[in-house]
Length: 371
Image 1 (cartoon, one colour):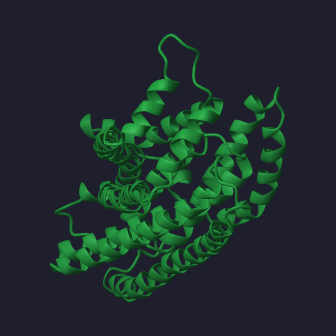
Image 2 (cartoon, one colour):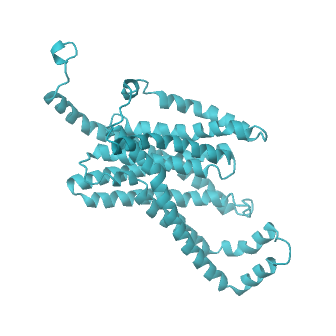
């Protein structure tokens, strides 16, 4: 609960800049940042330097998480650092030397990805889950033997059923191909279809703006960053080994950031040049990457289920090991996609910037007449 509360505090703090810009616009009083905040930081290697500290943070967090009396106090700040540093590094690599628009736009897009996108996605995914639960209940009622067993377990006048006994009762039905297929359809099918539409929601509010492909890419990147931060702050508080969970979530953060940036780039190209076929293609690529990731992750999760004995299931043990390797390969692929698209867009933008500077050169500060 303290980890969840610390994530909520961080989210609230990160919403303040966007709210300040919005309030200033409503009051027709543009927010002017101090000069020292408007300058770009010269320490471009700060995110990379923080990444070097990440193993130390994991080590300290793992030690602190095992302290019953102090973990509630010491773990939340380490948790925020462990979640935020990789995301900060990814957004630094993705938007490096690319235009991001005004600060108000950047913070608004980020806040949309942090708050609005997850809210819509959660509602739609819960609605889809309710439909799946109704189908599951229909399936259960079609199994007379299962209903009788569950009825005998849940005696309203008796004690609470033993969780292990309930687990053994449901296990044969949960391992059936039909149930496994339905789980894959939801996790690796419906979830990616929903999330890849609303994850870059921040850029949808920029429809009608003449965004360059680089601006669309960075807007999708920033919106995806907000969503990745929300999901990590929420899902890393669900229990389990703290350090292992945080390390595993790095690849998921990169997945959300990369796919949202690709969709943002395609949206900008579609609006500017009418290439809506490219938008459909990039949406398909984003959903495909997300679906493969979720499907592979399901195999790794199945190996950790309490009723699965890997010593008795050598095939599942082999599949889970292969799944971990595949997740690593996909993570490396996503990393090179992110920096590769950044390099391509940066190379395409530099000639335009040089030509604009040649037409409108910057004033010479050494000339008093330049002001």
